[in-house]
Length: 345
Image 1 (cartoon, rainbow, N blue to C red):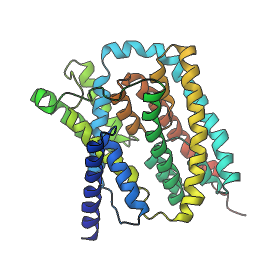
Image 2 (image 1 turned 60 degrees about the vertical axis):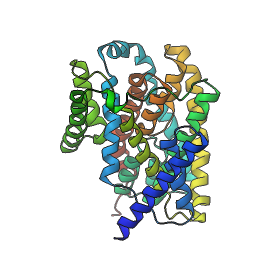
Image 3 (image 1 turned 45 degrees about the horizontal axis):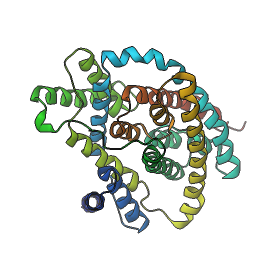
Image 4 (image 1 turned 30 degrees about the vertical axis):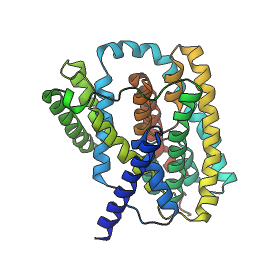
């Protein structure tokens, strides 16, 4: 009953955040409204609770949106961005070379926590892997929640003020305008892709599984558009709520010792991403907006939402983020074994 009440309160606060942002005419009300409402509530000491599998299911919508955007025309463009994609391993290595010593020697964290705090992987992935490797899960949760929160907050500002992008691109057609056959295929891609991905142990199964199935349907000429606007708004709502809920129970000592240090690290990441956003288009020829979104070290789900509303090429942006996430996750177990303390003989 206590969990149920906490979820009702969380939903009510998130919905109130949406209403405030809508009335005030602020950008991305279904993403930022819940995020900031739950963030304020968490700092106020209220007991919040995420929505578990419902939130995971909402992420499948974004997987379908990305997959449906992979048309034969988009695939034909992918070789042209190979030079940009090859920069990703160097980018991740530089982040590690800066971040691990920062968290280890400046912040004083143990080697495992320092490594997983520095790596720009998915929020949940880095917390789970870090905990399994012996890191501090609370520290990792706050650091990665802060990274995602700041990137998601800063990127729209920079898109509008620096790149002149209006975040008003259509997210999708209204549900009433889509044929029921298309909706049925999207639902199939979401559920089957998610569960099949979990069955085979696919990382990020809730996004990548639906993306693979939707891409197959799109390339096969069976799927011709992304999920309806209403579905993408639902995904934004649960993503925003989830970011805010991560701060529940935070103390001022944690804010001082963890969040402030995470903010300093995000500033370094932002400077590095800004440099690449300027230089990569000169080297590879991809668009400035696509380059900026591709190297912004936010979460995959959050960057998908921003790419959609910015009207960026989803295929280009997601290709870069997939390579980054795959690289970080693949290397994580290897580095974890290297960092694990050896038993004393």
